[in-house]
Length: 132
Image 1 (cartoon, rainbow, N blue to C red):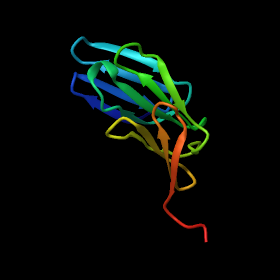
Image 2: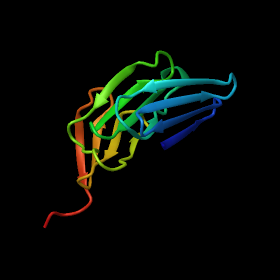
Image 3: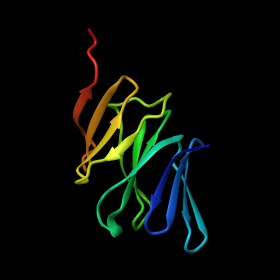
């Protein structure tokens, strides 16, 4: 089943599915492209940069990894963000900051993690509740 949908102005619809497949439907040419992420996809977010530099942050369940995929040119894996958030049982959203300098995600422990876009290191952790 589809967990997330992105509509692009270039007539492309991207879906992320629980089977771990990102599907890109190019409505202009009637083409379908499948990319296997290796784990169930629960959330996706595009970078805000220019057309040739577009990347997609793909949040995957089970392995709690966010994969950054180049969707502008090569389709290759560019970076991974992991180790500081947990997304093994529930849908956890991901987004890219407006300036493309950070990736932000929720976590099953109730926190929110901000990763450096390039280095994939944790910049900050936000908690929305006290443990007391």
